Length: 405
Image (cartoon, rainbow, N blue to C red):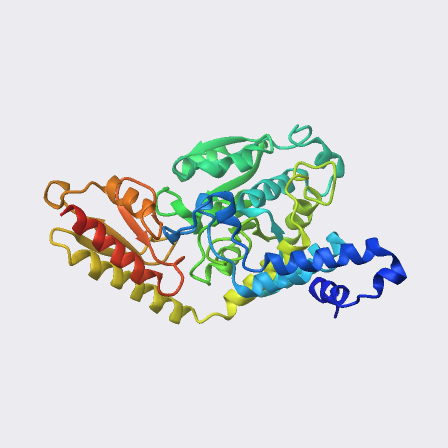
């Protein structure tokens, strides 16, 4: 099969093409071939004055989340060399993903936030194209989404984009009283499952009881791998995941899983449809295939071996940091989101001679640059490190502490 690279290489080796097609054709082909060769090893970030870093934090969006797996990049390169009909690809990729994660239906979105907007839009409009065109003007549509007060979070704006009002509740009786003919959906923030008074299973039960679709935002909740089908099997009508975190697909991609009718409705609110609230949330063919390939690779992975590797990295960092007198460290795994080992460091600044913000700054400004989790304490996330970087982080942490001790 012909690829862009083969085409350019071929042109660059045909000196007589100019005599047949004209000098302009030869020049263009040769220039393109030289550009391809010149771009090999090009340091774009250095040219732009951007300094890369070791990711000792995690899959934070502003830190560009994760590094894509090679399978995703291969799929992206493949897609870049072909034209296809976008809707056909949406259908085919959605069907494949749904079969892989044991869901009724699925679609690739531009991240989890986009999935929240499109899923909500689908609940509101159904397959009524007139309603699709009207959003966020809720003419002849329901207007309220119930959410636990403890589940309010920065990304619920993605739901409010559709014009709905969030109705806060705290208890089961409050939720049942909040249900009216205005209620379109019930929103659940999976990260706060242990914080709210209504846990996931009960939340789903109440949704079924009142005939209201339930939506679970589980954006950062892979691993464990079982979460990819846990919540749809639990009964949530819609579930979303980020594609660029633990799945290591394109950062600008996500997954929306759930009921066939709701996914079909969400698709009507998404590109390539023009007059729709999600028109700006375009997923290109490269991202669709990249997301599919990343998911396939993730499902084939030896997750137990990966966890052992994460544990080893965390222990390496803990041992190095605690070799400095006065520095303590604990390895912990968040209960829900980002469910992987992290290392929390603690010390008495008066005795060790350095403040947490100084440690964060010195790691960031040193060589190589290292970014840890933002906050008032020093927490190291190990799962986005490349092989061997745990030893670099361990050494640099010890140097920073000893420099001030």
